[in-house]
Image (cartoon, rainbow, N blue to C red; front, side, top):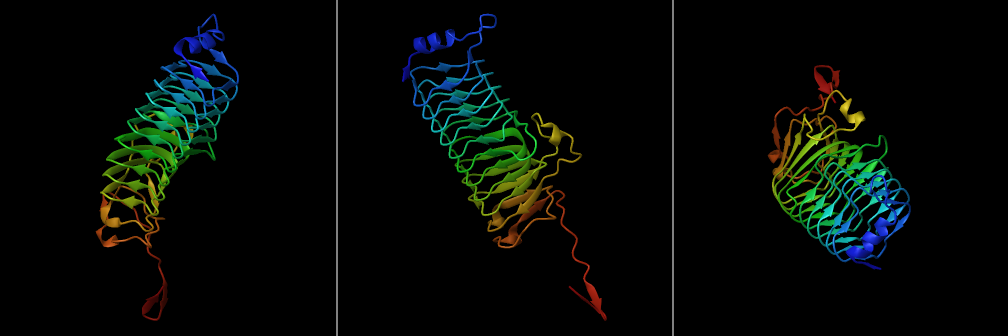
Length: 297
């Protein structure tokens, strides 16, 4: 179905709260819809499932301050203008899997409270803004960017995740600074086609099989600039740790102020050229067993 601005306004006017002027929608079915101009859902309340799979937003979409009380789906949606989700709250699972943002996408100050926030295979052609975004749910939750592609985004974050942040097989086509606070951060097979700096708080970082075409720096960030979920904020130290550099070209890797006590170095290339800066902590060598005058390990 095609929505002109007038038709969309008629739909939203029919469900507006007369006291607040805010649209209240139950289950919203906009699958395969085409919005001819800017689709404005600013402040809208979705109490049921909200489905925008394969929708086309020809003039962009405005969801600032919207609240999704149940599952929200934007799978394979095309945002041909800007996609504004500033201050949006997702109370349950949300998916932007294979969505395309042709201009810019902003999730600044967005809050994700479900078990999964899925941006897998999404394409960000312009700026991808997640400043102050946070995933607040404790325990086994995942913020998934697996196989997403960032064409020109220079920054990602600062964002915070109380569970696992997955950047597995993500492609960063240009220079980028990623600022993250999380329990775990996975960069398995992540491709950095430009210089990159990963500013990490708290997280255990897996860099296995990451592809480094330019220098990449992983630095433990003592002061995350955005809001923090309670379980991270209550931790006494923000030091990040690196768990694996398996099959990574260490000649292009710089590790700064990180914990390496549980890191797997086996299988890395050019380990003699790995750069360590600041205070990096290694595990103590085994004490061994002394047999006569010679120690045996």
